Length: 138
Image 1: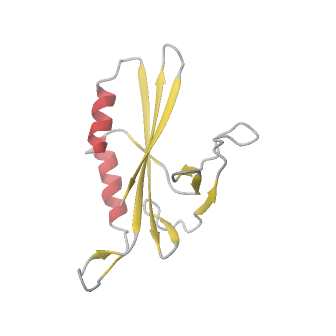
Image 2 (image 1 turned 45 degrees about the horizontal axis):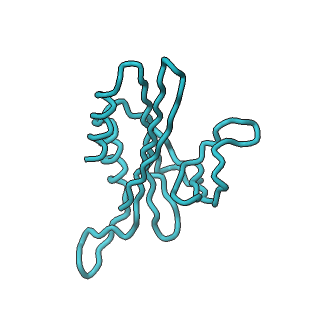
Image 3 (image 1 turned 60 degrees about the vertical axis):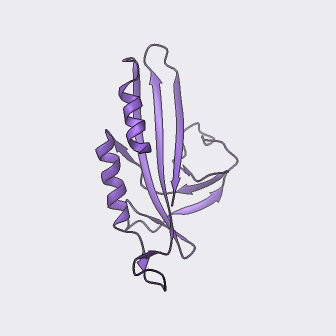
């Protein structure tokens, strides 16, 4: 529902407002972080960040937020033009989730997943930009 609401509100915005939506999807399994949108990527790193978004050279570091100052480096971040794009990526990532059986269920998720939505908004009249992030955790 949140994905639908994001794109609905974007469609209702003033014409001078531009948006970029990017998503990432990771799984935490057996104390490792796996990139569900690029499963061959095994070089994800996690570290505590001071909160600065830019490096010393003033460029974006490319690190994705993971709550309270903890960041993930190296996760795929893909653009979505509409709700269908985002839901397709969510479904694609779900196909790579780790499943195993236990006493309660034959298809139990033995992991946690985090679907990250990064929304950038720019007013083309004033040049003012805003950015927000949503973390959907399972």
